[in-house]
Length: 170
Image (cartoon, rainbow, N blue to C red; front, side, top):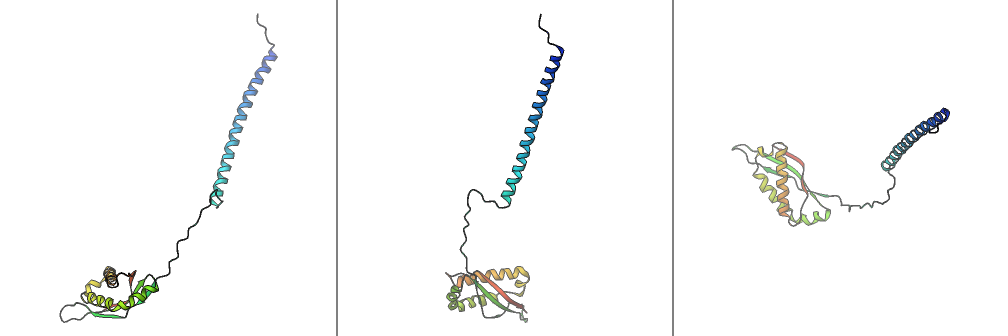
């Protein structure tokens, strides 16, 4: 016959088994909570370090672009041309134009070619009608055409843009 254990011993053993199981469960749960807390705190700390400009392991080298000199401007003489108009009616265009160029050296290079530029302007503008100059689209087309004509006249040099200081159509 098997040896019987006293009832007290069984109760004590059962209590120890449950306690060991409960203690094991609580300790695993406690470890998981602590690990999760550490991950959250570490993530917040790392994010703050990154966003607040902490130094990283590698240094970034900033390459500065070469500084361009500011553009130079050249005022053309005032233009006054008569536009194409229906018979018996006169229409005039008065314009003050400025050329935008890369630098002041270029202004000196194109000054001797200004008679050619003014001739190109006069020839083009005399063929225009008052209706061609209406609205911003008309002025945009005129600006583009004048820029193209200047660049042809002063080739191989180039200008950046034709700018209007004043335009009066009457």
